[in-house]
Length: 263
Image (cartoon, rainbow, N blue to C red):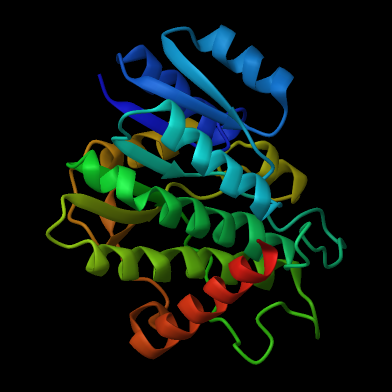
């Protein structure tokens, strides 16, 4: 029985994955920020599940969640960094996390960055293990002169740079953990899936959650090489900045500083 943590497992793609993984016999750790929703999802999907509570917009809660995982579980076979926020409703303005970080960068990228970094020792001990980062084909290069988008904020740009940051982290971590039995991959599961996030943004629904689930399960099941980015079920090419080692080093430096300042 594999132990699989799915962040953001109370809705959308995360919930779909939790249902399918539990049905296949895996032990699923259902993460959410609302205790009642976590309880309800666990009751509905059955199988072997555990619950974890944390608001990913607060790095102290992310840190506490990582410590709880280390305490409660002897091993972790798969970490799926799925939780996130979309571009938001049309006309919505810039928001910040509890730590003063631009909200989409904080939730979509920085929380998963810190959680994964904290869990690397457990993942290495559990090898062969996997990290799957649910990113997006919507990507924008990070402007390191204004990474928190304090000037000329645009909600889609905020979302897209947070998703590129996930992919940049994927490539970095895959290189760092090469030879240690931990595979690290990222994907764009499907375009405009039928989820709350897509409907909130007013975007047209173009694909099903099952379609995105099929693509994500392919990575969870280890059918691809580490250090790769996928669009659906096909290996893809990310924004050029993802392959820029200097840019990735600047992102690491920025991420580590933001985490230090928050904790």
